[in-house]
Length: 403
Length: 149
Ligand code: FES
Image (cartoon, rainbow over all chains, first blue to last red):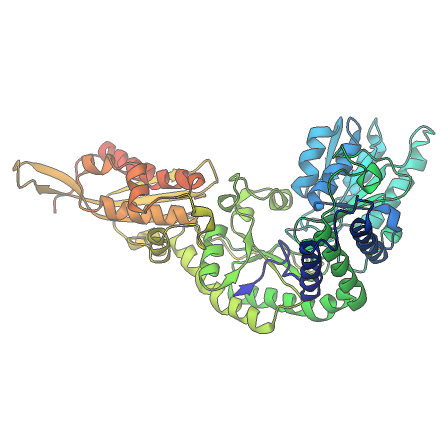
């Protein structure tokens, strides 16, 4: 089986598997217990959690006290938006639903910041909005890398614009908005420092970097406002109630350490990016109607998104699966809600491009032979579906030519 | 159906077979098939489209000895998910050789049963082909009498 959906869940790292198994063994023998208990097995558990916290903090360039363990990226994102309940919030139009939905539910004023054809935030719109808006936002949330396209968002530029406009507005009561970034697709793929990025809040999930499922991180810069989502426990200094997910947290720490020690972002750049780029090149050559949705020069190294006009995405996905290749699609047919991907809608403004989109996401384990299999099978699949299709193909058109 | 979620493939073997080896589809350009009536339906749910092409003829009913119009040949094209492809393929098998009155009566449930069931959120796809077929029959009736063989 060829697994090209690591952006959904990356294969569990062997070192994580060992660490988690060891904890489970110890839990079975009651050598380690509930970290909130004061007797020795509880103290031991607490030690393990604090060690994991140090590892995560080192990885993100934060202090351990700024790290909160959650059940994953979705909870982390929800918590940040909850903190800004009844406030003015601006988020990019291509955020993950776990930012968009709570933003809609909690914010008093919500602005969706549009993106350009590559999915990169429209900085002119942003500047204009910041200059004209009567109420300066209290929170801005922009992901560092988008999960469907892989595109990188210009966070540093956004922060510069903010500072500039703030001076311009000359309103002493207005403060610089707090800044949140969903780092889920960027962790391990890019060198990262929450200090350098100057973030107030950041989120990510362990399972995208080979850690366990159901555990994640919320970074809160010390001194930033905070409202817990889960109440009813003293855990995490009363910032997040709920029994500690000990195996998950230990596994998360090990996964972060693995990325940090091996500088995985360098391996992604050296090994995975050339593979991804050559997959794009071969598929665009063999399937001339295909359309590139990922800006190869401004994206995480492991994600490639393509549209195959007149061939529906779920059908492509199933054909590939029957050929032993697993990928994902932005097609409405494949989503439980039967809604097309909001990300592809935001960049192309038509449901069609989503309908026939396929996302390939590579891992450190992806081999050239894996991709050769895709290159050998996909053109035929797309051709067949295009033959059955009611849609007549127009002239081949590429959307991202080099600027 | 209760263990549907844990099946390695979300569809039944029959769906899979019709998806991989669709019957009676119109390959390439629609000019490749001469037809008497065409029906089209667009699916407002997820944006899929389907065309149905009928070759219609008349024959003598051996029992009543009366002349009847029937579907001599049927082809289709679809732009949709595996379930849409499979259910149209199934419908084409069910409709071929039937009189127009009989063909019109084929229900979505019949298609679904023929395929051994479809996941719940995929029922709307099985109605697609069936609507396109009705549309083709309607267009044909509006156009006038069938060609004699
Ligand atoms: S045709 Fe879209 S879900 Fe079946």
